[in-house]
Image (tube, rainbow, N blue to C red; front, side):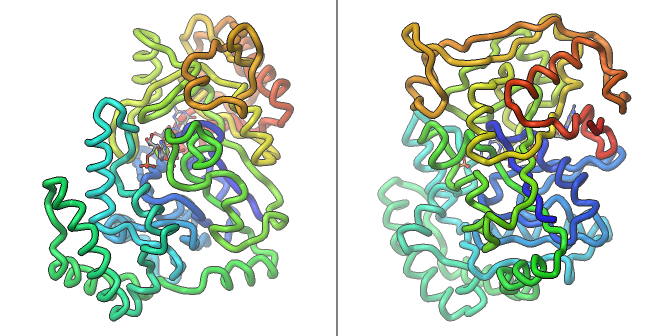
Length: 422
Ligand code: GDP
Ligand code: IMO
Ligand code: MG
């Protein structure tokens, strides 16, 4: 069985929790795109773990983590994660494999990310500052440096020196701190020795695993509304976040994916700039943010919140060919007196689809809402759908009927066991 877990909104839907949950039966958990701009949380009893690069499935005994070729890697962040897991007595020896084709996020990418944001001033996009855009830009302009070069260190020295010199010219013109090439090369030589044992041809590994009918779980990052092509660009992240990225970012054909699980938060959140059509302001937004702990896992920034947006979600289900949905954080809506769901968009008196909108349209359109009576009960300990408050059941049924995709699991707290299976 090959399963994909994808965020269908603006990220932070609860993918980490779901990957940990579905990972129980997985032989492999695979990241295939993005970088350490992702922040995925796994809560086991009262302990919280944050993953930026290592697949969230590795807590499961038999699950092997794979970082596929589509992922861009900040090696210092990766080593930190490896060490955190070591301190939890999880050794990643023969339990983590990294593709040599992964591009590296290097210090000048982070410097440039920050510089671009600073120069945008009021128009800043609100990136995570992790060097994502500049690293992907180098990849497609043939200026990237990969794990492959790191392993063949003479190539790394040559390419890093050349690239850092070019980037230093830009940084100098902006009066920014320059990259100390010699110092960085000494640092990366040490990093190379630590990373090398994890590097294998992950394509062959996954191809063989699939032929042997192993369970493979793909862990999507970010969300469809941040996809480089399908978001309101440039309010995007640097990678494709849709199902198609599994093929390019791991090598497995799309046809080999049996189940595509879309993760949907019961409301909407977004961290960073850009349009959010159903955004809630004021006291209610604050209440939802605090109750849902809506603060960035990577940057700690407060997340903006909004009502559930079915206009955007219909598009996400279609483009990803979603087979079933995991609805998360429904518990956060307990106590909200009336709950709204956006069922469509209107612009200039006419209906408009998500796919027809750019960032201008998304910023000015009017969402069409259906309002539901809320529920006040705490639902975190409920494990049977029939025991949920009636208004809460109506909310779930309405989402399912509108999206025409079955909801398979409802998550009612961060803890890995707090789920209602439908
Ligand atoms: P990801 O990026 O999609 O993995 O999501 P994040 O980990 O960035 O953010 C989701 C947050 O919600 C984390 O703090 C999770 O522990 C938490 N979470 C996940 N599922 C639930 C749920 O059903 N209820 C509540 N209250 N919190 C949840
Ligand atoms: P997970 O996997 C939420 C957002 C950033 C910013 C935009 C561009 O945890 O759901 P970038 O650093 O990627 O160039 O920033 O994308 N963003 C995310 N928002 N969750 C994420 O990942 C995100 N990854 C990127 O906040 O608006
Ligand atoms: Mg996150």
